[in-house]
Amino acid sequence: MYDDKDFDTVTDVQVEEIPTKMLDDKLTEVIRLKARYDAAKETSSGYHKEFQQAQMDLITLMDRAGKSRWEVDGVGGYTKYDELKWRVPSDLQEKDKFLSFLASEKVSNLLGQTKKDIFLAYTSVHSATMNKLCNELKSLASEKGEDLEIPGVALPKAEPKLRSVAKRTNK
View (cartoon, rainbow, N blue to C red):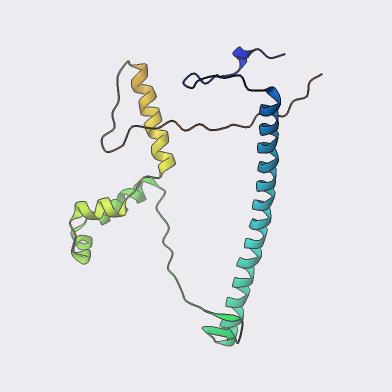
């Protein structure tokens, strides 16, 4: 039904004869463990939701009772506090405004740091976003027959990964 040409082959390793059963058994193990992992993750996610709801309920009860701290002897306790959560700007104009503020004399004076040090310390690139950009740039450069070195970024390392394929049955 399928020829070897239908599948990518690994060419940079020494190939040896591996019994089909050994490959079948390992693949079956990976699929079984993935299913077990997914089920545990789902269970954990459910517990986490319950935990978060219980925390919110406790905060509500503490607020209603006018308490900022509550303890039970032999069990433990919690102290309620407020934490400010700032949203990262997602709109390009808002990002521009924030980065301009970050580069301002006011921020530099408040932190006692140079604008460059502040920029390097408080701005970042998400690794998945950077990898997507670098791969796209590498592909575009290759199409033009050019080499591409990205300053400050080490050469990429290929990591072997597995991609699940649909379950099929032989007829």
